[in-house]
View 1: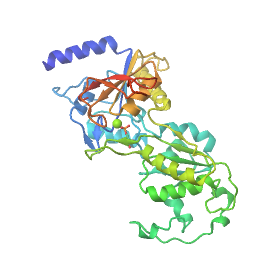
View 2: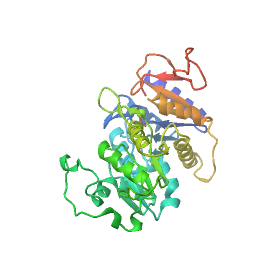
View 3: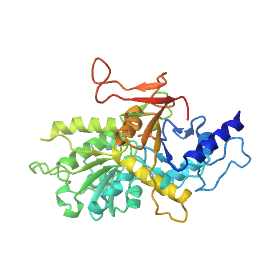
View 4: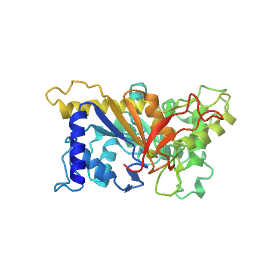
Length: 362
Ligand code: G3P
Ligand code: MG
């Protein structure tokens, strides 16, 4: 029954509260687009001790019984804005400290690029995101292209064609040099963005200087490398990894060296480190309010995800205390109780193969 199920759940929590944490993937596990996946809100409420049958379905932030975070490769908004959105869509308290987005690890680069000009790319307010991290000179692609009116010859045919005052690229002062490129979220205008990124990356950050003999490539950072992800459409959509492949294949035809880049997001280890740190802080607040600096060693942290190549692979790469759980609610649609990744050879096993349990829903 629901009651005995709840008791069993609470008993489990009382035994394990000190040692377990959970990281929830968002797209394909909790949401599809802006629509909650069936069961997601109810499951999250249980983590706060309020199930669907409880009188008071609302709880205050900080009352979670089990430390948990939201670990997504998506972004284009600040962690605070995402927390607000999740709280309203899923009807549970969510704080910005619980949200790790694909671009959250970009914080690591603030010291290096704080006072240099960086180009931000992708959907949403990428400038706002980067400025929230502490970058002071961020120019989003939408503004940058207007410094070079002829850089995108297809712009007059696009939906938001806009006339701007012509500027001659060679006259641009040195402070206009782009020191690094950050792809913050999924690019919207692939054709334009690939063209301009090729210009920026191979010109030392000064597009239009065709004569310069091979300056070093401008550093390129991507918030994620998902080939595809689950949105509202029944079939998964191309993600930032697909964009990276398109950019790379064209850039490599132009430049004397293959594209060099760093991609964050799952399965890279960095977001798992951020998540573990957030879980530790949450645990300290929940269980040791008297000494919030006390750190805990989690026995297990579950990564609940829908994408074997990002969520599961990343949790396995991250090692202890991470344990992956795969759902059938998004990218993965198989019918097996255990997922076996395709191996390297005819025997379907090899150094890169793995197995993980599968759940039907959250
Ligand atoms: O753009 C969103 C996508 O990259 C994946 O999001 O929540 O499944 O990691 P998520
Ligand atoms: Mg997902």
